[in-house]
Amino acid sequence: MRKEFKKTVMDLASQDDRIVVILGDVSVYLFQDFKERHPGRFYNMGIAENTLISVGAGLSSLGFHPFVHTIAPFITERSFEQIKLDMCYNASEEMSSPAAPPSIMPGTEQHTTPTPTWRS
Figure 1 (cartoon, rainbow, N blue to C red):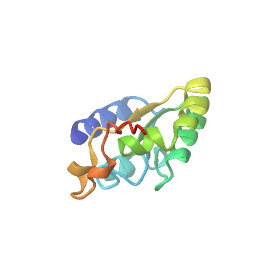
Figure 2: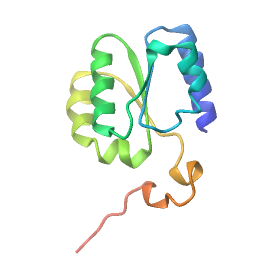
Figure 3: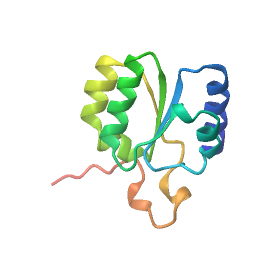
Figure 4: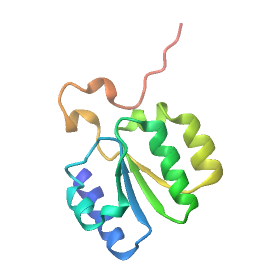
């Protein structure tokens, strides 16, 4: 699924100079050829989920079409306020996590979705 996601983004980016990719230290090697073809449209922000959303919203407000990608629970749970305020209220961007962490690296099962509901 990640390979198909990358292929789709690559195809879109070859047709539209407004497509940018913002990664959270995930799929960096997968997107290496995107970085080489479109160096000014590739950003690896590191492990900074809140920043991913805010940077994507800022680029969107400038007319770009950002694709923000990292592990699913990180992009949603750690950056919920940025999603609500920056992305939903002020901008339009794509948020993607086409692979669950165990498919990326064994032993990361705690980073999967959906998040359990805890009751006391």
